[in-house]
Length: 363
Image (tube, rainbow, N blue to C red):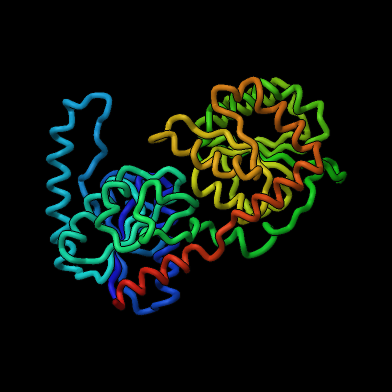
């Protein structure tokens, strides 16, 4: 069987795409897989690193702020559709898989027009524009949240969850141990804003360093590379408190999740899925800088089930650290969040999505 997978632009699209491809290869070792991405976007680097071939399209996003600049965008869209039609004629895929992003729109639209069944994967609690446009052409739509029939035909929806980093599930991340300071057990607060960091979260932590330094909480703070130097400078100005670690990036996430009593995080789809699978209590700070405010929708899906706490981006400076300190010292509340967030976990997501793709190919 041959599978065409398209999407990207962000890690939130790329990671599920690669995970689905890996699951397809496990279930169908003879499978041929080709990715289609957008030129200049991160998938053009990350997908080959994962061992798959990728073709880039000149497709770009529409400029909503300056609509008159979209003539060239439309020209590139037409070029992309022509290019992907040739790719499809040459590769002859049995199924197309779209995970969202600019390239996914062009590739899956062309595939459906050419009679190839397509499966969409929607990571967020509020459907993206690309997948909403393609919904009527899709044979199946795999989603991570309930009540997605607000956006998609109910008879096409399959609740699978989002694929997460496999190494998180292979070992220590399931444990619930405490962090340590000088060998003594303490509460452990993990602060993550994504690989690039989150300015609002970092600013709130910088302002509250004296308060955190006086606490008996072991803090691991991932700042992101672009904010790292200023955050370290703030930590040094606060007297280099021994209970606070500052990192630009954390490569040992299984260990970090394992020791965390509480996580402060943005509300991207992948982060939410990881927190659910690992049962981690969290204070979520949705980014306001994403399409259609989908991170708030992701966060509210947990908050409404009493499975996480929400602090809005605009309120983070005043509320984030006091909320986290109060919560991490409330053992009963932490246990309640742990129990409730575990109930929302969807396991084996990549494999379940791959099984649906293979069903379409066989049919």
